Image (cartoon, rainbow, N blue to C red):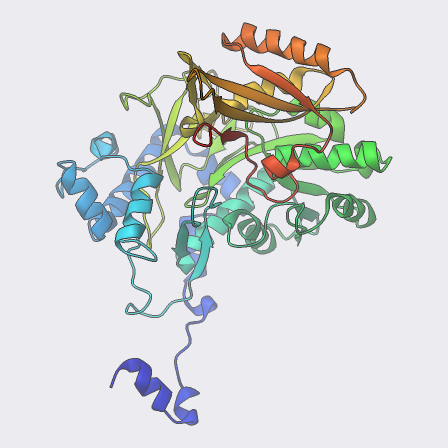
Length: 483
């Protein structure tokens, strides 16, 4: 008789005795908080470690993660194929010897071993019971990529969420409105857990525009005297414009103390001017949670280096970039148990901040900003183009509202490839031809390539970009295959 049939045949009184894993019993919380201090204790301890102290802590935790990796089939196969052997990594400097991997390797792992892949170091059907939570990637290409989190993995991510919000001014009993999707994707629920558990503030989970229409987002902000607004910068800009232009409400009158954004290439000053408050940049992913964040000085995003190790490398050679030089980020988790992430090629492009340490007193390295994704880069007639760079130029023009989408097209007759950039005007009645000409010249001057510019009315591009329906906004559409 199988365990399932035994359970089905068991009398009710036996079913009542079935062990149910309880979250509060799954962790030694004081020990975890000692290992990964929470706010505000973090800012008087780990946050102020000197560089050599940070390196020593990272080395200790890296070796623990590598030992864990050798227990997992994904790493046994991937590292073995790259010529790595147990014992080859004995210090932090050896990290560069580990073969990196990317989302493509994760997808292949899931295809070989559905539904979780062989990168998950636990078997939920066989290992000791523990409470698990499932969240996914955005799923912009194919089925969302699922990730299971153990209590330890999730709680460290929550601790870091609490730290970064504290860094950005959130305090107990503040109302923090979260305009991130609340579904399978990780961002919204991770924000809720971190706010609720580790800041003392109150999360107001309005979700994306599909879950709470943008006008209602504004009404809630105003009626409940919300203190902070969290979301992707494009949607935060859209909320402000809807308040100002459609509802006659000056966003500055709402009295927000801060916008907490995934800023990317958005114009921070324009957002701050629209809302009348500071804008704080944050970088994170589904697999890691928050990786880096602005402090109140906004001099670059501090990496949480007790929990993450970040490398910025040349995308072609894998060699480390110097400060100020752009490259792709390889990220290594220093805390995960179920699915360690060791030299994960995020495909996100950034650079290290140059110059003196931040005035906040932390020596943790800082990222400048997120310049785009390497897999979004388009080579058009010999020129590398990032949609995010195009968007930044579009947003400079005073006649636009900053919304745009890049569409790759191929002429069926000639085979010539072009990029058509559709952008929204602030005012649908504004003469479009002059703006199109201005932007054509500006983009040619800045990027060295001539693109096709096409104006649209305010809100017209939302069905293409998903601005009002999802947190994962689309800026590049490849229409070449359809042609």
